[in-house]
Length: 394
View 1 (cartoon, rainbow, N blue to C red):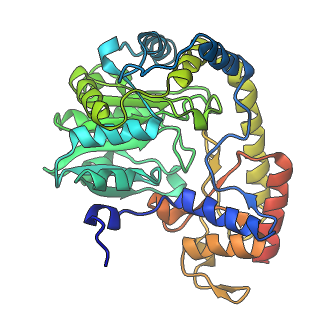
View 2 (tube, rainbow, N blue to C red):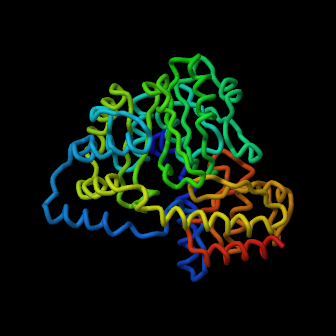
């Protein structure tokens, strides 16, 4: 008899983590799986950050940290927001958490009541939908297209707003599409939101520095949106620190205080050693990680060039992050290697079983016609993976 809560029974498993687990199982069986499913840089954490962690250990940082983060780290975050984003936050507006995912969950838990609607431009990061639902909210998906680089327009936002709309969540650069909203595009969305003063924005900027167009813009930069926007960021992607688990928000005081209160009852403060290392990471110039961004840009051109040689796979050129999100709908209805392809999930499973390449179905991101491939992998692995895919689909 299942005595688990309805809440957990109705929760989806993270598709990216599920695919990674499936790939691990096949590797354990001796299969040579190439993983293009996880959103994790394949670089090591830079030595200057590791040295800061070692120093913190030697300085005996081993006690509970403040719930909302060390004062010195909050100051480094404030300096970073000013330097990189032209945003002016005070210490009381910063909350440090165990990864940006916890930051997002905190915001949902303190902002949403049952039935509140949250607009999610599709595709969205895989966990947005379930985080909203876990906290009583109702996700409202707004479909975008590859022709528009998967970006929601002002007209689409206006059409999605109802009296129950409480928030809009988006990421730029976007996971999974790599799309980057320009200042003009964000201003057009802000002009719609100006007419609806009770709607709040979550701007997920975790991929901020992995940006190939040379210009990152934050919704909170607009004076009329600053007090209605929660800016979410962290160090996982830009600094190759996924396992260090440090994320943070800049938010209106009352939201930050509520997140601090929530976190105090759930996890308390984030890892003390990781926090000390992040101070060093954020105080450094973004130029220190330019070598990673340059390599990702090379890999983007490589994987796009190879995918464009495969009939039926439709791509656009993402401007940030380290993903491509090709449309594979031309394969739907076909039978390949004896397997009927009805949707992106079937297509993704075919690639895993026949090409031994792990990808993620677009259905997990709210887009059933696409799949996500991460190019946070070596160039040799990218070449081999796309070669296998091409053979499997031929």
